Length: 190
Image (cartoon, rainbow, N blue to C red; front, side):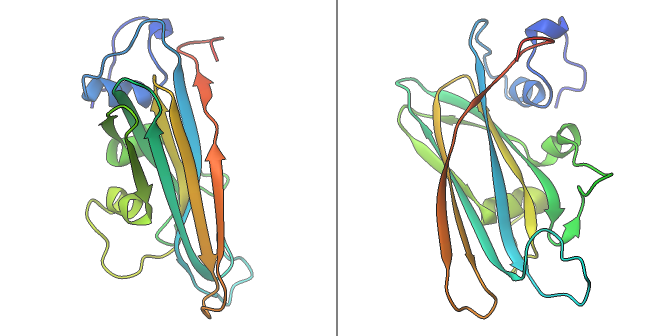
């Protein structure tokens, strides 16, 4: 990935999107708005502990599926990266620490191109694969973070959350539609 993008600070997207797009040689329309969707992701098993502080979630099994659809008549270049706060049970973003997307995106970032009206999904298996560099074996520990999705194109993004207790009794499912936010290109622009 590019370490030192060139040009004035006002014509570039904020890092890490600029590095992801530069690495993919993706075209950046000069006047287009960059839209981002920030999706909370909760995956894996949280077991009970004898400690007073259970990190992130109560004991249970959690899964998140994020759906992305290009709702335009043109191909959409989509940049994505995952920022973990809890990674396979290890808390990496609890105050005063934080997860830095500039460092994390080098490992968990990717660029895809969606054809017109095409859709794709990222789920817990894909997130774990990005974090670990390969497919998971066995049931991973709890992972919580944000999947950040950016594009110059209009996208429809939704998240499907499921959870059930470790006993297996009952299940919860929820669908959230994630609205985009404009991301400015420089100071005072969003």
